[in-house]
Structures are given as C-alpha cells and as structure tokens.
Image 1 (cartoon, rainbow, N blue to C red):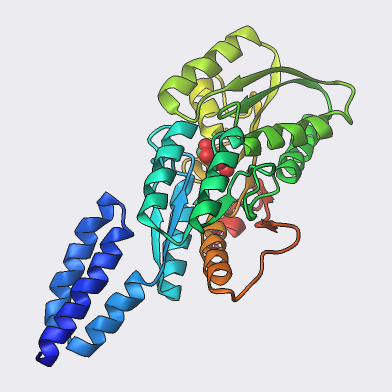
Image 2 (image 1 turned 90 degrees about the vertical axis):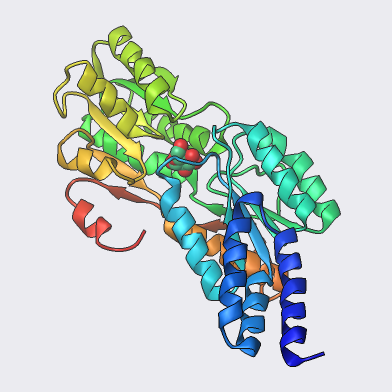
Length: 339
Ligand code: BGC
C-alpha cells in the first residue's frame, strides 16, 4: 500500500469513529473536514483528525435559543478547542424535561465520553444517572442541579446565595417595606426555586415586606408578557418585582402597561442583552450576574480531567462559579471583563 493510501485509510477509519460520536447536525461539519484533509500534508492531517475525534463531550442546556446560553456555549467550545476535544451543545426547543431526556438517550447510545445537563426537572435525573453509569459515561449537572440524583458533580452558581445577595440589595432599595412579587421562569428547575428560597430568607428579616404573588413566565417573551401584565393589574400597589429569571420580560410588561422607568423597583438575574441596556435606561435597578462563560469552560475542563484521570471529583461534588450583584454604578466595570 502506498503511503497516501494508508493515510486515507486511517482518515476514513477515524472519521467513521468521529461520525459515530456525532449528533446529526455535526455531520456537515465533519464532511468539510474531509475536504480540508485532501489538501493538507498527509501526516499532519491524521494528527488533526485524531485530535478532533479524541473525546466527545455533550452539554444539554434547559433549552436552546435563549440568550443566557450564548456565553456558556462560547466558553465551552473554546475550552474544547484548547484541549483538543469535541464539544456539542444541544438542547430542546422548549425548557421541558422530556426533550432533554430524548437528547440524552441519543448521545448515550452514540457512545460519547461525558454528558452534562442543566435539568429542567431534577426528578427525572436519577434514571439518567443510572443509564450513564451502566454505559460507563461520566454524567454531571451544570447551571442547575439535581443533588439527590447521584450525578457525579454540579458546576455552577450557588443559587440560594445568589438569590439572597440580590434580595438584600433590592430590599435595601425598597427601604425594607412594601409589596413584592416574585417572577420565575418555571416551577420545577431547582436553581430558580433556590433563588426564591434565597429571597424569602432575606425578606424574613423585614417584617414590613410582603411577598404577594409568584408568577412563572416560562422564559418566553410572547407567552410571558401577558402573565406579568395580569400580575400588574391584580397588584396595583406593587413596590418591587424580583425576577429570578428573565427580568427583561417583566420590563416589557411594565412598558406595555404605561409604567415609567423606576416606578416599580425591578431586580433580576443575569446580564445578557437587553438587561444591561434596560439597566442604563433605569428600568432594572440591579441584577445577580452569573458567570456562564467561565461555567462553560470549567465544565469541559472538569470533564476532560475526570475522564482522563488527571483530577478527582471534589468531595463536595460542587464547583461554585460565583455571582456578582451588578447595579448601574458598577455595570460598565462588570461588562469590561469576560464573564
Ligand atoms: C438560568 C438558566 C435559565 C436561564 C433562562 C438563567 O438564569 O441560570 O437556568 O435557563 O436563566 O431561563
């Protein structure tokens, strides 16, 4: 066999392996690699393909298309490139557990090396942990946890602490009194419920703060805005709204109902656009910024290190990515560094 044939044979074999570990969406990308392969120097090509196909890590977010995930995905892919591993970010259209389970099953059967999930419903996770263990695939949670599921570890925000930090800053602005509503994304994700728990703990220190209602907007503008409009109609004397997810949805409702910026104090979570713009315009008084970019990087780094044996899972089974309370005063400083 000539050297060229041997190399092409090796490439074909490696690509077959790569394809077996890919979601249907990534096939096009792989075909492009074949084209590049034919023009690059033979020996280097094999190394490049080998590096690409070395290990495959999959992250399953709550859903795709929500701006929160952009930075996390960026961090994840960049770390993957740096380490020479393949990274796939694939979530359901809607933030529902069944969509995540279907995606999990398809990658598990393809034989990937590690799967991370931000579970929409922690109650569905123990069965997934069991299947991953049977298949010998590392399984961890990120962004939101399922602590009772047996998952190997959780990487992300301490949501009780974050919820409490934001609540304390907001209650100070409210001068410790008045009616407050809580707005959340969905009712099952643990991270959002822990943020509410953090708010309630902080509010318990103020006898004159009353939590009047909790509304779940489903993290979607179209369906969420009318629900907040109903809240504003039902509670005309609200002094503050604490949105543990999607404060921008709250602002849309305030605007449609003719409120002025600052008329109701709004605190939220996260700092994807349009949240910084709405802060500058005076609609949002503060937000608890998570670190999704760092989180994406850490998830891939830990997967790599645990799978290769370079690191052991910490005893706490928790890697805290931290939070910052961002207000209009420190907003520009915060935005000037990667987060
Ligand atoms: C949460 C995610 C959530 C996203 C959009 C973030 O605050 O950490 O879990 O999916 O908001 O809903």
